[in-house]
Image 1 (spheres, rainbow, N blue to C red):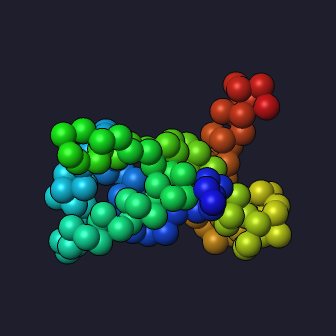
Image 2: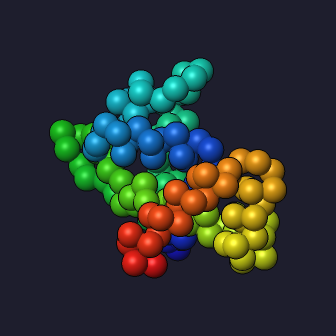
Image 3: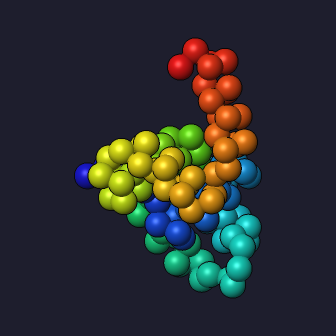
Length: 124
């Protein structure tokens, strides 16, 4: 069953970042480009197969090796993650998320004004 709307786990996100930045790649290439401690080839292969099953990557066979490419864009992944965060932490209220950012001083009034101007420019 393909579940494209669920947020990515931390390791899935790291693998997706490699594919978004480097483009289509074989398991070994993904393994080499992952940051941090090296992961076993089989671990990366398993995670790519999980992402395939979830519908987040696609693969094609080339010279006896599978080449994986994103089926999910970075923008879609951000959207799914934000929706999950807003639903779980803020009862589905994006306004509550913004207020949480303001209240915890992670979003200043200057930045809020800048965001307001950008929204007005987009006609929203």
